[in-house]
Amino acid sequence: MIKKYWFFMGMAIMAALAFALPGIGPVIKQYNVLNIGIFLAFLLTGLSLETSTVLDQLKDVKVLAAALFSSLIFFPAAAFYAARFFLSAWPDFVMGALIIGAAPVTVASGTVMTAMAGGNVPLSLFICVLGNFAAIFTIPFMLNLILAVDNAAMELPILQMLAGLTFKVLLPTIIGQVLRPRVKHLLPPHKAKMSIFNQCIVLLIILNAVASSADSILDVGPVLFLVLSFMIGLHVFMLVFNYYLGRIIGLDLPSIAAFTIHTSQKTLTVSYLVWAGYFAVAYPMALIPAIVYHLTQMIMDTLVAHRFGRVIRRRSS
Image 1 (cartoon, rainbow, N blue to C red):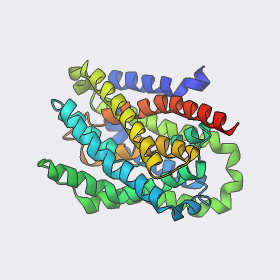
Image 2 (image 1 turned 45 degrees about the vertical axis):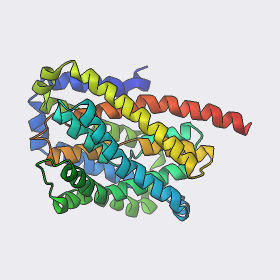
Image 3 (image 1 turned 180 degrees about the vertical axis):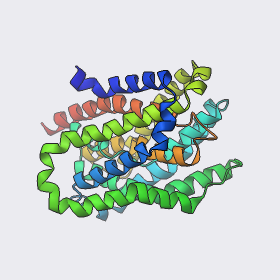
Image 4 (image 1 turned 60 degrees about the vertical axis):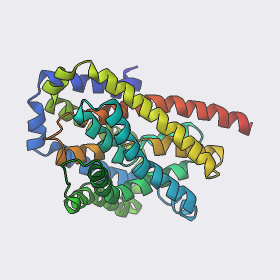
């Protein structure tokens, strides 16, 4: 049971530790523990990504456009305006919904769950690679655009954000891809360890975020259940939206499974980089919605993947 659910147990332990020792947040920031860890996590991502089959998906412009539109344009707008309607009394959570909405898709879990569903894994990898590379450029512009349209008194430094995300996300991924042909024969025995390392970085992010806003979280108390309900609703909405979008653009069922699952997921790592770099001071609780969404997608998409798997196996038999 511990081996199967250690990550969820770890989330609870990190949250409890953050409340018990809130001073640990500044220590993590002072010594750049997370910045170094995130750089290494994306380096490992570059090493582990098998992108040879991804190029075959580039010829399908419809999927390319649909994935970018859904994940990086429609999602942040839908998340922000829905949060502004349901969570307007808590600006931190509204901003948090926008941050997680603008983030790219997950790297590992979306592909793992697509494989679990018997879906189109190369398409899932394509969505992963395309979404993460494009998000480096779309995040600053989408955040600025939505905040400007909403008349928010905030203007983000676009070039600084581009440079920061490029250095912390894009550069280590590219380095990993360059190194991959020389070391890929050494990687298989260490895949599980690499995955555990990446998940431990997520746990550190949760520890740092909760510790940095422990007092504020205690003040809002029961409102967190409202945030949980909102994020569950948002994820269900995006799953349904992407399912029907996949059908509209003419995907087969295994490809619909990949598109539905992976395009609906968001990465907590990049959300943290954006929050810590530009929003943490003004909105100390803004990463809480991202943490809740991460937990929601891991639980819900496991069930969705099993459902797709049953249908795909039934139709192929």
